[in-house]
Image 1 (cartoon, rainbow, N blue to C red):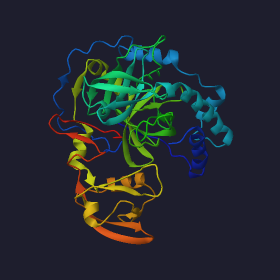
Image 2: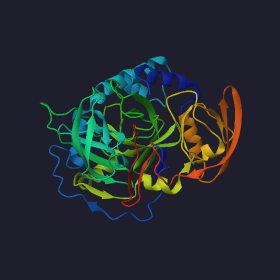
Image 3: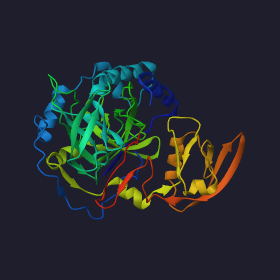
Image 4: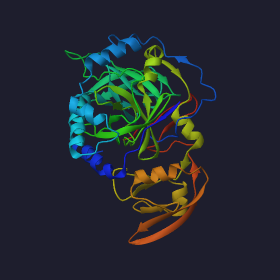
Length: 403
């Protein structure tokens, strides 16, 4: 089932951007498959133990969400009833509510370290239950480290994973402080609507000491069964972070970047509630995103800083298409496949639309001179430094930021 949001007139985009800019500074995969060919056999991870105090199911989660939700001031409700905000005063009403949400959410938004990969997560119960993306924790019963915005670290354990939906669960195993861990309530399943304003937090580009989880603001563009599509900006490392409504309830978990900056994918919280028992029992099922990438993703063979402008190449991988064509570290990529490139994130989005083994062109600036190279893209089938961990033997994998 597909539901779409009405678009916002272009003259309002600049005003909307002011909200995100005032709040803070700033996953790659294919769009959701229409159907899984054949789900992998479900595996049990062994006795992980119940999560004390966690919602036992949909009814309990709905009740907790209502009790802990922020109120919406009457003036804000009037703004939200409009198709879009049409004055600066409207935007300020939204901004004030976003700040209320963020003041609670920052403490509950965490980074998750597993081996050499880093993703994000959100604590949803005082005893330390964490919701994240399935590809962040990869498989059950793995020791993890959970990092808070203040730099503190605690120990944890991965629980269940549904790699078809990309939902994952973990828990903090370090004893909770007095009063429990900071947490955000889970929204009732099915409560999200197209056009609704949402707030995204995470750890883009991996955890950074002294940096609070950056805040992104957007709207729901489309609802696709268990997937939420928004224009909330995501980059590597955000996977597993929370998508929140303006009541401060978790409505989704960041899953993957779409083919353009304004179209990104999140696992609907209803999917977690539906599979709560299996996830909390530490079960594993479905096909991992990394496995899908290994079968379908084009490969250029360069690395760069997604936060930097212009698009500067920091590393060229030996034997890959870019190196064979003549691209060097330090080159500024200005065009790819005939399209203008402003930064590395844009390069990744353009390259994503290509197919493995496509013939294309790349234009770089080197020492003030523009050079044009022709190349054939490769296929992402081997482990790349800083790239997705590919584990074909188990059908599982991790997508996060390698430090």
